[in-house]
Length: 312
Ligand code: BDR
Ligand code: CA
Image 1 (cartoon, rainbow, N blue to C red):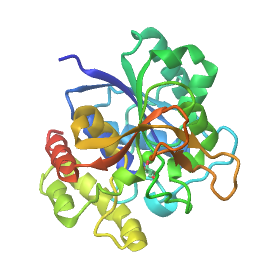
Image 2 (cartoon, rainbow, N blue to C red):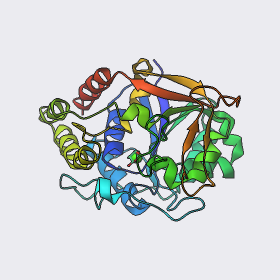
Image 3 (tube, helix red, strand yellow):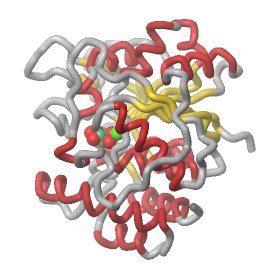
Image 4 (cartoon, rainbow, N blue to C red):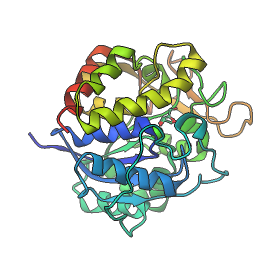
């Protein structure tokens, strides 16, 4: 079976880290590279964190690039209140040994899409869409060459997490999100409506710890750290494991269900900036531009995650 080639565009982030580990543990996927973006923490930390995670997976050969250090049209908003000062707070972190690539992440995205056969590279954005939108704007010829953009971001029924109306990744760079959603590339969205059903219960976290491996211990300790914020905020028994839903979809799409609908991004209003105006009920008459997921088989998702992480 041909492996599906992906670029992971990310702002690690504990849940980004778990997503990267899931991808590197899965034979179905070929990770061409990891591009870091400013989001949960500044890009100097997200690129460093991406290298730490590749090394943890035993894959220092994965090229890691630093991308954009700020949103297209606004100052950067970060989320240390969720992810801690480093973005990967929880366990003690080693210094990465592998080098950062010298090329810019946006150039890597453009060059990869231009040199690989059309329709064979999937983009997996797990943070603000700045790198992807910058690549699409600078090199519009790459857009029809994208196999699919599978992203974590937005919400419909859950509405927002960083503001009452917006999810963090879209809120941070709504202009970038608007460019991507209007690009014409095939888009699949994992919104909060899905990820808020992928909760780390006590039993699920203990299953990571019980692996008895370095990866199992780190994932359990990362989860312990970021859970505290969501448990308090939502009164839930665990925290949503957002970003691994993107990678799980590539491996087992049948775990997810959704609707092919129109999604527009609010960029003008201060009150609802970054809102994903998702036409779930198909009342707008606007043409569908995204597969917007609404549900997940959470048991199946955690079974997949545990089985794959145990391989590392
Ligand atoms: C998203 O925001 C970040 O904090 C997480 O890593 C995830 O990508 C959830 O809103
Ligand atoms: Ca993220």
